[in-house]
Image 1 (cartoon, each protein chain N blue to C red):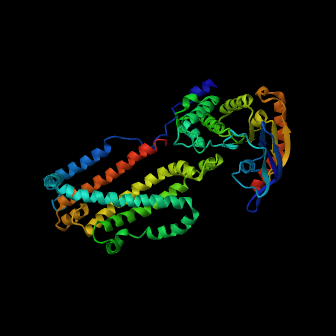
Image 2: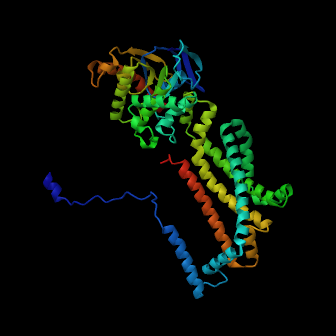
Image 3: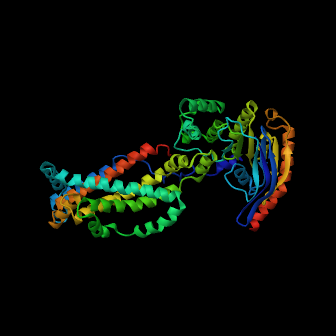
Length: 269
Length: 255
């Protein structure tokens, strides 16, 4: 037996597992950004990329410095941030509230889900004239537009999250004779929290898009107005400065949600 | 407090899952319910615990539950049903909060039940940090916290490996020996049934009916792994169930 084993060829079993599990790698994301900017800078300086097609990153940087020193930066950013805060808070909190009601009560679900499905695909920006007639040309119509745009996706993700709460946990609550209110606040809401937060990521990105759109259609100050001005003058440096501000806003929103996820959802995984 | 089942029958739509069940559950005894898969064991338990309503018949409480019992009919589930976002202590206080028991009073109860299930040092742990056996012990201590008159245990050990199962059975036996509790214990494992049951109710295949009630007289504390008389009872039970299980298996194929 052992002789025949020795006579046969032996080799280690080849490894074929591993992979398919994302691992956290630091600095790669940042270096992609930096490389891209450096390539653009070198390209525009050498004339390989014409100044008409792409602004020089350092010029965009100088535009920022100018914006900062002239005080215009805050004049544009602050109204935008406050519009975003008011509109998104309004839309998201209403959306979460209505979503929870839909998740909990069959009658409300039967009544509202078709309505939500009907207004979900409507591009909210198309309704801006309507909001202007209803609420006037000033801030209120912008709040309303952003709130409305945030509301529908938040509702949909919230009632989905409530539907996905583990029913066996709810049965457990009933088996201990917990009150309806306790079951909702101590089992349903915490159980739906992961879904609600990941839905907010999407809704808040939509809020930023609508913010810009609303400001493009009627605002003196605001990032949207700033980008529109720059765009109509084909001032690419300022256009890109505006775009960078929007990206920073998006990253900030995402970081805020990430912070809440860490705080509220530490029990996962 | 005793429980009595009178002519319990249940159907889901056209499908009758059980019929004509009469059963007494005497106080201070563990009644095991065994039967082939799909015979409605777990449904029967939910009917007893008021989580579902029987189509016919009724479940009666005989006598009042003790005053100190916060939740007379208390479940222990197969999947533990612990809230993953609450610590061990939070999961237990969950069932006390609604009775207005908070602060020091709750603390005392939690310390007591955790000591009884040997979990004292895991008080602040989250469920994800615990092994399956420990999770089920948390669920058992949560059930003990409300002083149940009857514990309704739905395959409590089925999700655990066999070593953990043996250990937890010992735990249950010592819990019962120290302070006898009433329990309805659903299982598909005959070995668990003969270790823990004072009475073993054998159900027939669907529609479930009571085929036989087997009494095991030997005191719980004296039952041990490999006892000859227990093995014989287990064999007897298996013979009762064998045809039912075979027939049930064939029915599933024919469906």
